[in-house]
Structures are given as structure tokens and as C-alpha cells.
Figure 1 (cartoon, rainbow, N blue to C red):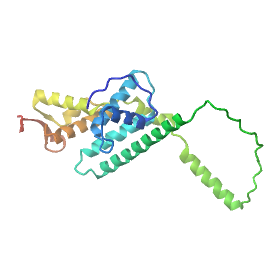
Figure 2 (figure 1 turned 60 degrees about the horizontal axis):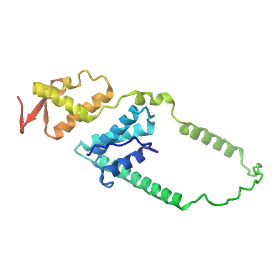
Figure 3 (figure 1 turned 90 degrees about the vertical axis):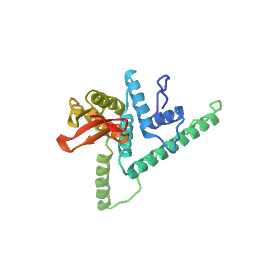
Figure 4 (figure 1 turned 180 degrees about the horizontal axis):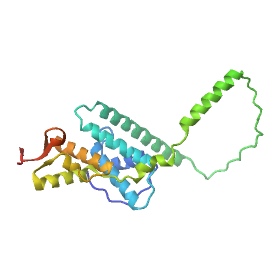
Length: 238
């Protein structure tokens, strides 16, 4: 995917950012390459951080959603990944259509006209309904239950997400290949040594799956005895 160079824009939401990336890279919205889109999306979030722009939780939630979809694409069966891809495509198309309609309405509406202020009608505050005590109790219990479910999450619920740095799978692919370039083979456990952050460990695991899929490395053995070997020219380096 071509690297984008442009001024940081203010996006209305993660779907707005994804539509911009799809348009800039001339991607097919009906067959989105999740891996390429994810890399550009994470770069955008990093640029927003560098510009001291607030990254809303909805942008981070979309990043986690794209990472999950990419991890599913590495598995033998892709039914769930295809369903999630179709859902994302539908949301993007619907959002794009809404933006187009809003733009047309904006062009059609002109403020160069005279309007009359709304008439002041006195509100009727008298409730004329009649309910039994059982109906009132049932309505109260339902309101209490819905009120709890609709309450926004507490700020501390997002502290772990916001404070966690984003580690790209590409950086971990480079790290794994560098380790194997020096030693040709290394224990599977050693590839995770020194990675205390959860995002680093997840990215390293996805990098190993990506390299195995691309036949760049091979994993032999099970458990703590498993070894990772570099494949060079179709043969495993000894």
C-alpha cells in the first residue's frame, strides 16, 4: 500500500477515517484488504497522538476490531472473518451514502431566505393516562433495569486501553527475522522474552503466524521445547 503524506484531518469517527483511507489508496470497498487497511489505520492513530490530538475510545475500539479480523484471516477457516468483513463493508457503504445525502441537502438548503420564528404554545403538563398499581410497578422496574444498562462506562474502564501503546505486527516481523538471522534457530519461548506488554506479545504471536503462513520460518516441537527455524531458499537453515 502506498504511503500517504498529507495534513492530519479531523475525522467525525472511525468509519470516516476508514473511508478516507479506502479512497486515498483506491481500494475496493467490497473486498477490503484488512491487513493493509489496518497498517494505515494504526499509522493514522499514531500521527494523531504525535499531534497531541485526543484519540477517542471509538477509534481504539475499531483498531481492536481490525486486529481481531486480521488474526481470524490467519486461521484455516475464515467464516467468522468473512462475516465481520461483510458487516464492516455494509457499515461503510451505509455511512458513505449518508454523507452523500447530507452533502446534497447542504447544497440544496440556502440560508438566504426569511423564516418565521416558532409560535410559543403553552405545554400541556397534565397527564391524562390511567394505570393500575401493578402496571406502574412493572414500568418502574423496567426503567431501573434499562437505566443501568444504558449508563456510560466509567472512565477507568478505558484507562488500560488508552495507556497501552500500539505495537504493529510489521515491527514484530522484523524483530523475529533479526533474531533468526543471527542464530538461524531459536526457542519459541525466547521470542517472547522481554516482552512484558500485552500488545507486544499479541503482535509477536501474530508476526510468527504471518511468517509461518508465508513460509519464512518453521516451528518444530511442542511446549517449552518448541524451536523456531529460519527457512532460506525453501530449506530450513541449520
